[in-house]
Length: 63
Image (cartoon, rainbow, N blue to C red):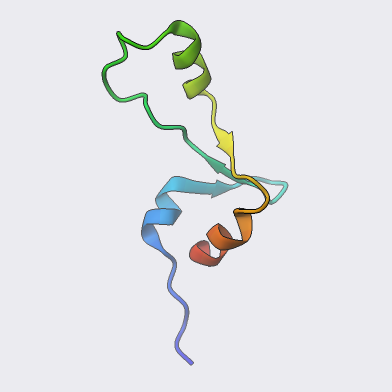
């Protein structure tokens, strides 16, 4: 049985926290920031956590 490969695109987008949850960076911070409100830009700055139902699928890609 060959070794399983890590999905590199997923590995670049997700990080595992100390508690085992999956963390990701939110989209929308690259350009066209003048049209976005302060509140929206502030909320985009924070990282997000993957929902519990989606975690097994993404873990599968990372292992």
